[in-house]
Image (cartoon, rainbow, N blue to C red; front, side):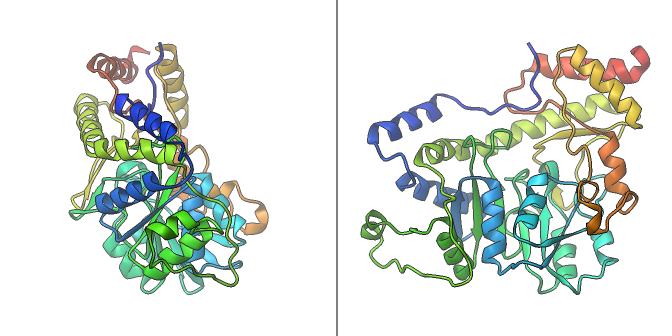
Length: 375
């Protein structure tokens, strides 16, 4: 059997929670979502949280609720999920890229300082693979420009003692199956701003306040917003029931990830490869454990070696986003050298809370045999 790269940790509590919802017959968005939203807000430290059908939907609502309109330029990194780029393009906006740090894979504050941000309307900051970006420096560089914080890969990570998801006007996360906790599909948008919350609520569903909801919330005001068109981005109570049980376990999941990553770091020292790690300002939760091979060819050989030994590996991300865009956007190879170089050498190995000690040791032994010259 293959040792999996990532694996959702679902158990008896999640199954019972779903069964309870099915028995209740209230399976669409309802009370379970309300409970889950409160728990997300409390865990992250935000005033408001709204669940969504996906992390991608959450990002779309975050941008629209922040006042982004077609033609706006949005700064982000080329080393990230295509989904983020797709949302920017779908809204008729233009992505403006900034290179990354090799040691964290996050957007580089040094590179941001060298860019002309006058025409940029907003900045999407992505905390990559479980480690926070340098938010103080980024906030100083951005000034009054809205920051949309994507912590889908870093829920529970900390920047200077404060959990990520707390920085900027609005933040978004994902509960996809490979994330730190899961509802299968799903996401959330979080903010302290009442107006952003109200806009996101309107955008999430054009009948945001059905009669049953109004009966439970008699003071609720229904608002309309001109110029933005709502759709249906709701999470079901079936998903929220799973999320309620998952978020209770999130800190335990993350501690296991940190322990397993520490084991890898200790065992891989001296192999001549760059390992995952932390900087003094941040606490890592290791959504991915990624190695940097010395060359692209070495990575190709390592992939074959790992698969031959029944160990799943992954490449995030195989090509920077600026090289996936049409030439009309004006980007070319060499524009963001760190992101381009990392994409050729990065490789993720198994790391999830369900790993056994025997599996961890097999991964370590397999990697060590390769780099010790046994392959």
